[in-house]
Image (cartoon, rainbow, N blue to C red; front, side):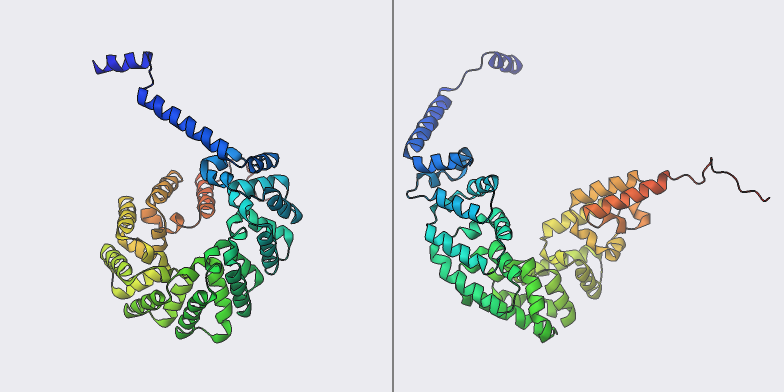
Length: 379
């Protein structure tokens, strides 16, 4: 009976009355919105081949604002060397740019030129991070102060530009907030045995890898370092962890790390000292929740991997269960058994793994001897 009803409904589709009302309401709302749009803004965007429909769907409120400076924003980008398609992409991705006052645009241009003097490179930055360039005027003073502060630290201009682009929030707040985190990072580096002559190089590398570390709590960083020291990590090992985790130690908590360590030790059945070595080889273990770790251990054990193998190659815990299952099947197809051949072939980047599979396949297909090669005979 239900099949007959379904068939009948399919033959005579009728739009529910409620759906028609909703559709009509949506159309009326769209009509009202179009009527309220700033026609000058819409026309200017159309002339630049900007995807106005996409703006309507995602950030329609921008089209309602007055005044808007579409031509000024496009003109600034073109002066820097941006092509028409690049201008269209920037304004589609970040239409709020047209709400920035021309004076603010010029102020941003001069500020960014101090750390990214090559206009072509600056266009590339704006194309990837338009919201970092077209910012609120009230943040400009903080930006100036932060740029000056990081330059006083002798950070490379490229690094400062990368910080501004990747973590604009850190440059939109008082310089004192960033200074607290920088002081905490420097203190941790030196207290853990780092050399004073290398601290700026270390800091520069850390900030370039994870600019968001500036937004973290300096006190949490100290608590986490002390917790790990209590777990038996030496100062040198802690310095290595701080570097390998790219400052992510500042985002964790002692309680979360305690649970991750306890779960991993139980799953591996190893000593405290061996667990420390596992973490040093796979620092990401500290960042995973118990649920994620359970899934990854289950996936490896289900594939026939033993705890002793994981202890020898703990980096496999960085791989998701889906990746492990896929790679195990690929290796099996190449005649490789991870249970006897080891887990080294399982790890690495996608490119490294594909190269390993290629070599295994060639080795499998290579004949033991060449039947057409001439035999050597003594004269």
